[in-house]
Image (cartoon, rainbow, N blue to C red; front, side, top):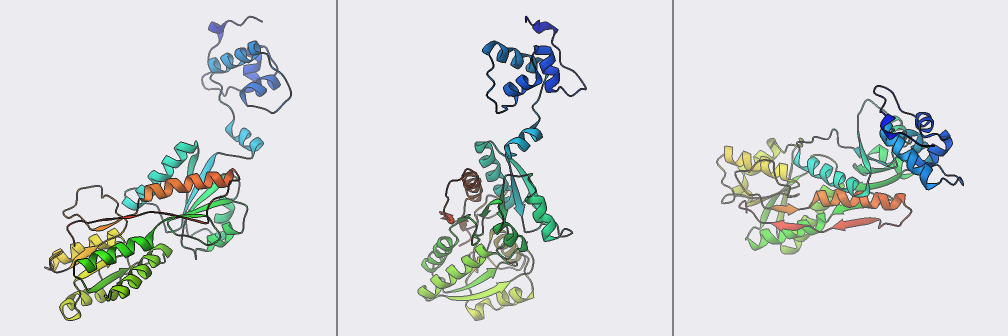
Length: 344
């Protein structure tokens, strides 16, 4: 059959089906499916027929039915992200860095990303059914080990990799929180600080707890005293307990403050500025995460660079490895580094 390519036109406003392609190419829908959708078959298609079908499909604007192909292969090529700490905020530097790493990993592995939040109006069972219902091939999990969803996914057939917090029984990719805290303790000791205020995380976070425990252990080895304070808000705004400690910093001997994360450190610096406390002359301040802010700050924070974009990207690679049946380490810990600014 000789095909007039100039006679083939796209069908605006209509869905072009295999049947349309087959009719124009002079073949059966089955043969067209073998060529265009990769249908498994022992049918042999000549090179001339294959070329005719491909040319026709392109001219008509045919697009394979992704859902149908997913049902046949039992794969969607979509990875899910579950964020168990409320709602992701793209303008938040930490959230943005995590999303950047996930997107890089998905692009490199030719996957799409679907984001799920911990919406509280749904039950744990409903959230789990949504995740395990076949829309995604695997899940990147950012949640506390005590999140009720963790137990659901850990005991399921859904491929899961945790990121930021190591979760027992789930392959996890994390930054070296302990090593970072040791670097901070050594740095402050070398600067002559002997009594430190440690600002704890306001919520439940395995990584934040690991940072504190590692810092406290190293500080004790160095003969440093650690006084703890805590705020109840994630922005790090000071409350009465910590304000009182800072007001008595001379009496208590506090000369430095270590914060579980950079937002907490930046909030403390803002408080010091508004209360006449000079940083670092009166109080040295250290953060953790090392994420560059969207605008140039008035100070350069001493902090730990955790490389969360790299951590998230590696989590995608691990998840793809799990999906392909390859073994991955129970916990993969990526290195961190100390960035010395002008706040210590």
